[in-house]
Image (cartoon, rainbow, N blue to C red; front, side):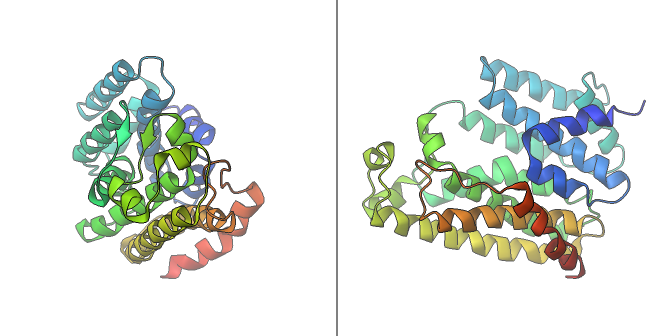
Length: 275
């Protein structure tokens, strides 16, 4: 039976204008496939961030993923994912790795090294790239680029949300970087955007922009959805630009794009189809 795509796409529209707008640029069945994967990912994230009992809800989500892969779906999002699995080779390992990232968010987060941050960004977002790539018709050669693009987007989220995450007991900025730049957590809690802190932000932003460049080179491997992926990346890059324009103040302000600012990126995304 055909999944209820109105219900599935509503999950995405409710949570991510960035992804939903980009998904409309996939052609044919690939659009529904992208909805199926992203809705499943989104609900796992919601189990952690919006549930009164996140550990139990995360395990219920994981059971739903298992039912979809076993061909025994129950919820509408599971039916959508099972539908996509009949058409594309979407790796279960991607969801398993994502689950590990979600589990890390259940307790207080204190990362020590940069490689831990990159692992986290892979688990919660690079995995999305891995799972979307087959829907876009890409082979194994595109996997590394897809992961880097996902990591860049999640790094952008981490940089944008430092203040909000701190209030939730999550510090994604690696301790080694905080120590190197002489930034104290107490400064962040009091909203102090110091010169040392802006220097730290610039270093992480530089690494993030490098990942965008390397990830976007993978567009040439896609047969469907190049403009969709490009538009999502351009929107996240613009959030990073806005954060820089705000003087790297992510402690008391949130860098966000207006609908008009998102729409202005569409021509460039369409142009990037030819890469």
